[in-house]
Amino acid sequence: MIIVVFIFGFMAGFIVSKIIDQIIISKKNELIRQVFYDILTSLETGGCTFESRVNDHVMIRIGTGIYTGHLMTINLMERGLSISKNNKVLYISDFVKMNFPKDTIIEDIIKQVEYRFGKKINDTVEVNGIKIDRDFLDKTLKETGQSMGGDLMGGMYDEKLVPSEVDILPSVDDILDKILLNGGGVDCLTEEEREILDNRSEDGGKN
Image 1 (spheres, rainbow, N blue to C red):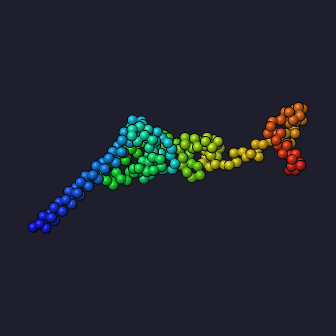
Image 2: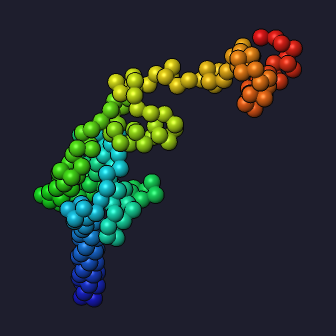
Image 3: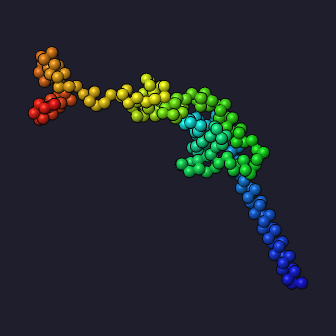
């Protein structure tokens, strides 16, 4: 009898423990799903900004709520997304799709992004086979001292468009002509031009 009571008590305790675990897991899943609802609200209230598009991936910066500063990366082809911060992925849409298959929150978020940022998403330039949004490309080129133009607009970057240091520096003959035309001797030369002549003299006049 004691054994039966013990077994019954053990099974009851095991069942209760499983129920409690299931409740905890369910609560945790609901909290994670709520993250995506909060992000949708941020989108709908204009609290997000477009960062960039590279091929089928669109980056959106979250600017309001408890997820301010987080980055949302959307895969337009696979209709999925992830939420990250400091290059660490925190949440993925597959979690919602797996645990809440009838929930449309992920598709709702993607549609809202396409609605609000569709113009920027579709305004792209193809560079070496990579599709990039025009604003992001322009910003990147400015940071590297280049500009959008020429063959780059057609999707190819031509290194010939960027002058080399040799092309920029004046030749010795140009400097000598400048001295003769101005009649002011070396006083009419810039420090850079004087340095070129000095280097030429040190080389013994060799080419």
